[in-house]
Amino acid sequence: MEIGKKIKALRVQKGLTQEELADRAELTKGFISQVERDLTSPSIATLVDILQCLGTDLKTFFHDSEDRQIVFHKGDFFEKTDMELQNTIEWIIPNAQRNMMEPILVTIEAGGSTYPDNPHEGEEFGYVLKGSVEIHIGSQIYKARKEESFYFTPAYKHFITSERGAVILWVSTPPSF
Image (cartoon, rainbow, N blue to C red; front, side, top):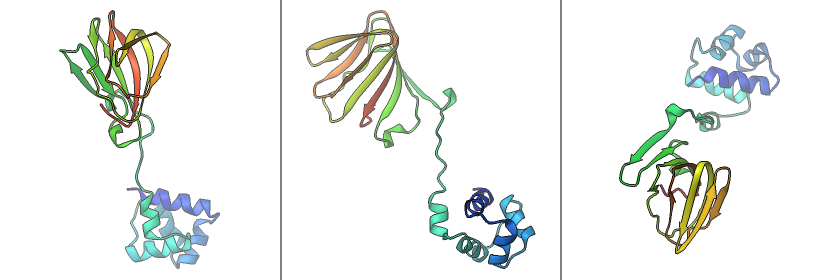
């Protein structure tokens, strides 16, 4: 963890110069500079002093330290191909099952389908990126083409098929894939 960048951000947020922070913490400006550039690490006691001067404490300082990835690239995706159902599912947000919703990219080969899903709590949303699909909900069948979307509450058994193949962005909450 690069604590120096975080200390610098707090110092700037408080409107302090390195010299002012050093004076308050009874340290040298050079030491503060080295800490902010991650060239040296302060002892725990010194870090506590610096954080006190910045109006925070260790618990708060490190609590918000989780780096959250915002943008995901193709290399981050997890892919599963089901030869029997003739589809490929790409989890485009890794570990999304811990979130409230789970977006996936589904490629259905011609004549393929998604696995049948039983009724459950939540919501299902899809956007057809390529081709057309048939959404089977209970005994009803709904068609959606490229650039059309669908939405339903999964109160009945449901799955999606495609006669000619399709690619859809599918978001479910809670995650169920």
